[in-house]
Image (cartoon, rainbow, N blue to C red; front, side):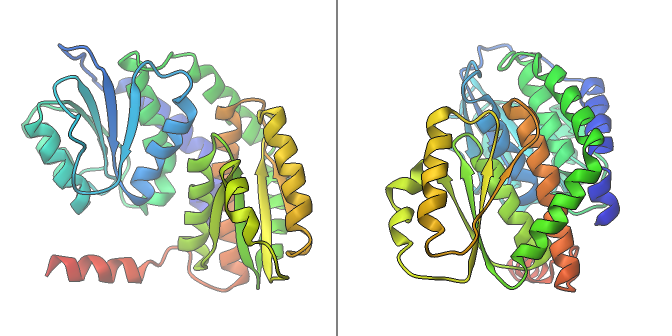
Length: 325
């Protein structure tokens, strides 16, 4: 896992080349909405892309993380199927429904049944390197999703410049990122972590939590500001062993920053020494790519501290084997 985490920017560059070389085709109908279908490490990219594009996308983007697809899916819908293995049960079910709905479909996968179906039906597909855990290959699905949306003019291709700058900034800051991640991992050891992300970064906050779940083998929760101000904030009434981490960004609005400052003060009365970490970068893309890399390092270092295997996911394998019976 350490080598894969270290290669994040290399993966982003390779993913960009793969996406640019993929043969996507235009649709013969107007695209009025988008559905991105995928789960786990294959699906979180869709949630992040939805956050990145919600203020600029020319069509509404919906994320699907189950067997069934929404009723609105039809010939005016772009459906993006994201399954790293190509054999995700729920995603395959949704794929077949999208075919029946006559939607425009594009797939991102390393192989499996998704690529087999796409090849047989002459459906656009982007093949990514296989043989790893889906959560370790986020760079490929995330980059692929952005390029597919760009190809279909759902978003502007201007994002590519920020993609390049983000890669350069992460490379320049790599040592600092690792040092800060190790320090945070040490502060989380023996505690019950709570992650508070900011509006527009829900997918990033979920990804951070998921990496701590899978790599470090711990339970934690997350919430988003300002929504948590209207419910969860009231729950902080007693001292606890929780380590609260606020994930802040230079691109956060003035009101979000003020809310975070006040929440830090309130929560600090009951969870000692809450931590605020601020992402490098000046916009959403730069901040988001930073958080992905930083969170991956935190989860890896915490797995080392806790002496657990970051790759092992036996309980998920057991679930899949039971479902297959």
